[in-house]
Length: 179
Image 1: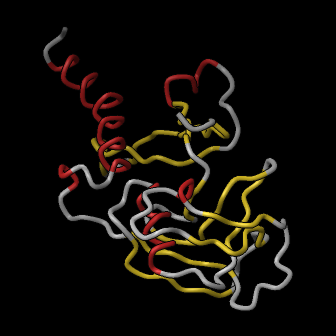
Image 2: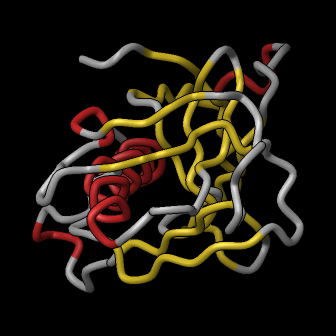
Image 3: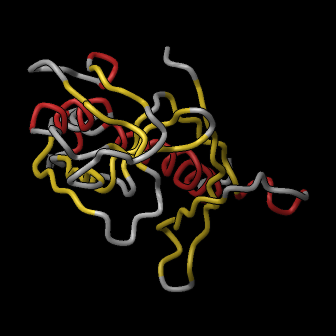
C-alpha cells in the first residue's frame, strides 16, 4: 500500500430543501467538541497524485510536505492516462496547459510514462521544486468519467455511495422500523 500522506475531515449535512441528500464539504481542521463528532468522518488518501477538482484540474503531486504542479512541457496523452488511471478513471480525455489563477508552484519536470502505465509510479520525472525552465506552464488534465458507476471504472463514485449509504440510509431505515 502506498504511503499515507494526508487526511481530511468531511462535514456531512443536509439542507432544508432536500433532507435525504447529504452535502459534503472538506474541512482542513479536525472537528472539536462532542456536538460535531457524528457529523464528521476521516478520509485518508493513499497515493501522491491528485487533481484540483474531482475528475479534472491541475495535476498535483505531494513532495516535501506540500503539493507541487507538473510542468506541461512534454506532457502528452500517455502521461495524462497514467494520472487518471492512478485516480481510478479509465484515461484522460483532455490535456491542456497554462498559468491563469493557479497558486501551486511547478515542481515536477520531464514527466515521461511508458505506454499503458497505470500510475505515476511507473513513470520518470525530475523534482526541482521550482518552475525554472518550464515553457508551457502548469498541466491541466480532464479524466474520462464513465456514465455507469457500477462498472468499476470510477472507485471515487462507488466509495462516495458507500459512505452515503452507511451514514444516512442505514440509520434512516432502522428508525422507520424502530430497530
